[in-house]
Image (cartoon, rainbow, N blue to C red; front, top):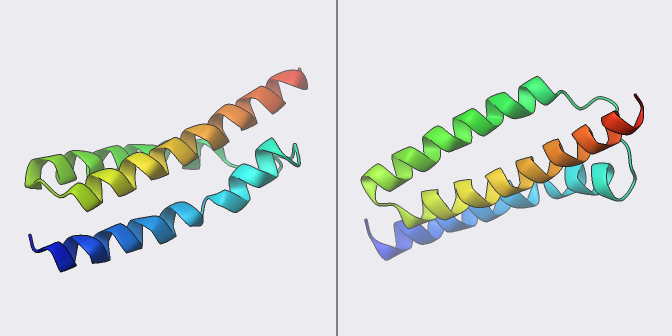
Length: 89
């Protein structure tokens, strides 16, 4: 793949990761988890893992980096929600 194509992929991945920041802020800083569906987040995680595998197979660093970064964000949200919900029990 050409360098310019990978740059487009990296920029798209960067925007995708930025999109998760409000959710991370909501869960970790505002301590709010209402309206967050963990099954949806698990499904998104599975999709990201498959995209990561695809990126590895085709050798696309932008796909690999983007999906690893997004997975980290989702894991932060899932961990925070589970922590908050366990306090309510």
